[in-house]
Image 1 (cartoon, one colour):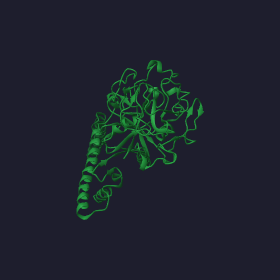
Image 2: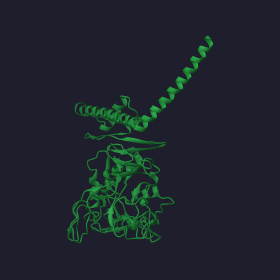
Image 3: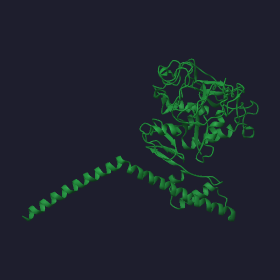
Image 4: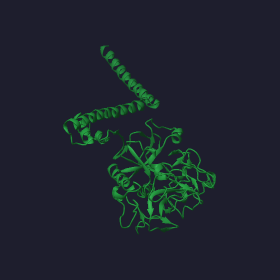
Length: 426
């Protein structure tokens, strides 16, 4: 009888443990489905980032005092990171911190995916939407720190960018194709970047009239350090429709990088080949700021990223990233808003479509890199014109594909030309 009692107790105990395990699993699953665990992890990450930033601020204050009192010679960045390391922060933490001598402290985050690591600049967050959160598919970041799930509103209300991974040894410009023939602008040196104002003088910090020498240098250093850059997910958009310049002075309108915006066309590169700032007068009317100034202004106050008009070398890097059997960059008819694309009749047959108008015009989460409107770049042709890429709704995708390199007067403002931004991490 005693043995029977012991046996019954053991069975009950085993059954009880099994039931508890099942219940615990169910509770965890329910919590996960409700998003509580995800929110807890997000709160923890934010807490860790806040702690790191608070410690960096304290260390920066110490550096300021040490410089004044003791003549500290270390840079703010080096001093702060040494202090953080002494406090037990890891080398991985320190990689995310950037400190400038004038007190700008940035704490970025990191997206880790197997052996891939992507820096997420402070002030942005990685998408949680399926198909938008892997490097291979095109990792999308949204402006703001609020998490993004299956939320259509976020695509139309928040600026978005896609990570383009880069092998720095392959970060070069390449000749594209025009009417099926390979162009020679790069191989012959006719297209320069940064722009060489004079074949005798060239471009240097001393004669950097448009700021592109220093900007290009900083951008390339960032790409090498972080292994890539961010490209605008959409062509630059305008919150209000840009109108025909024959009757309208468009001025400068509010620019966004979001889905379902009016494309920002009727915009020039800048007032002249050597001037990137100031309003552009075209067709005797003020058409507002040019693509270079607009691009630089979007995140002018950010301490984590710099926004620029896309460089030709970045455009070619993006093409290498997206090129596959479905996205032929030398005949882009199938995936762009062109005159010979079968999808265009249902969207916008006789004018540029809104940004992100058709899913078939997307490659690695980047929309309208082929067709819709030509896009200004930082390249220059001789001393006469600035570069534009990608073709437009009036052209054929087999004639003017995504790789095609065209040029236009920097102050030209037409319906078939817009632009695209890029970001580099500081």
